[in-house]
Length: 79
Image (tube, rainbow, N blue to C red):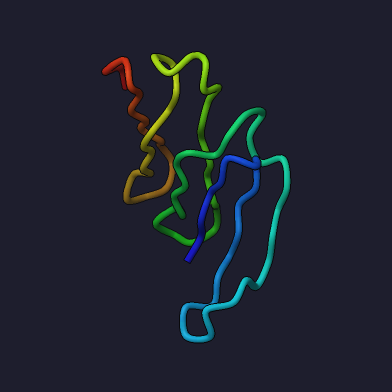
């Protein structure tokens, strides 16, 4: 499992052990609100934004089945 955080990190977790396997810092300029692993498993994609600009924060992302395209959603309703 991969998680994103307000401290600009993404973490990889061992779900059976309940322990962190790896931490990557500064994955976003602000906060990592959305994380997705590409369908082919090659990429971990993070997205986020600044709390003071909530209308521009990316809150969800996904990759296409062939992992060549990304789609995102934001609090302002744009994609």
